[in-house]
Image 1 (cartoon, rainbow, N blue to C red):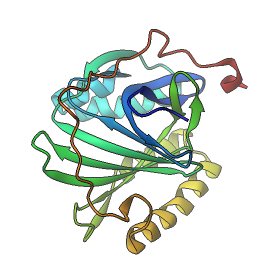
Image 2: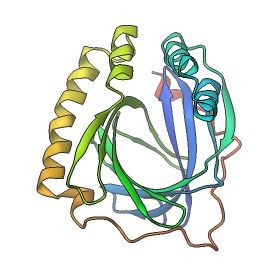
Image 3: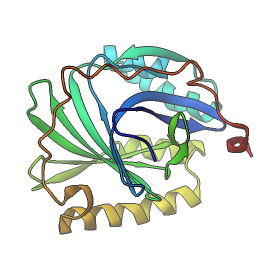
Image 4: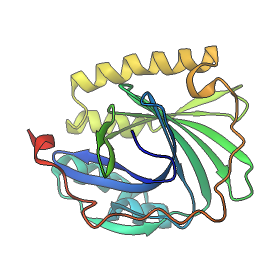
Length: 219
C-alpha cells in the first residue's frame, strides 16, 4: 500500500504509452480505496491537444485529441493545474473513480464520477488506468446529477478505442455508480468531505521516468 504523505502518480496508459501523468499526494490507502489529493500548482503531463483546447476552448483541438488517441499519434507536454483542488477516491477493481472538486477557497463545486479501467498499482510510481471519457457530474449535496461527454464516448466507440467489451463494462459500471449514489454508499456515504490541502504540503512532482511503462504491461 502507499503511505500517506507520499506521491503516487495517476497515469492514463493506452496501447503501451502514457496518455496522462498526474502526481498526487496520498491521503489514505486502505488497500480497497486509495484516496489522493491534487491542487493548483502541480505540474503534470497531458496531450498537447488537450492542453491547447483547455487553454483556448478550441473544440477542434479536443476532437483531434481523440483522433490522436485512436491513431497513437499524440505528443505530451507539461502543464500546471489551476483553479480547483480535488480529492479523489480510486476503488480497487472498479470501473470508475469518484472525485470531489472545490474552488481555491474550499467551496464545494461538484462530485465527479470518472469511468475508467480498474487501476493497476505500480510500486514506487503510482497507479495506471485509462479514462474512458464518460463522466457523471453530481451536485455537492448529492441531490442531482447529469451525464457528461456522451458525444466523446460515442466518438471513441466509432474510432475503436472503446470496443464491445469495454462498452459492456462501462454500461454495468454506470448502474453500480448510480446505485452507490442513490444509497449514499462508498465515497458518498459521509457527504461532502471537509478537506483542503495543507499550506505546508510540498507540491507532488513527476518522477524522471513518468512516461515509462513496464514490460509486463505491454503483454
